[in-house]
View: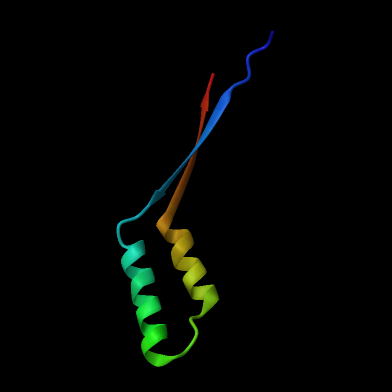
Length: 56
């Protein structure tokens, strides 16, 4: 019987991303305005690191 490899997805979050998101949420709450989804998405993509690990 053939063995199937195990694949693990490792996602890391940079240290400043939670502080950035907290700042965005706070400013939205204080001003009553919505955030710019395109800009926030760019920062989130910059702050996430994904790595695929294949185990035999």
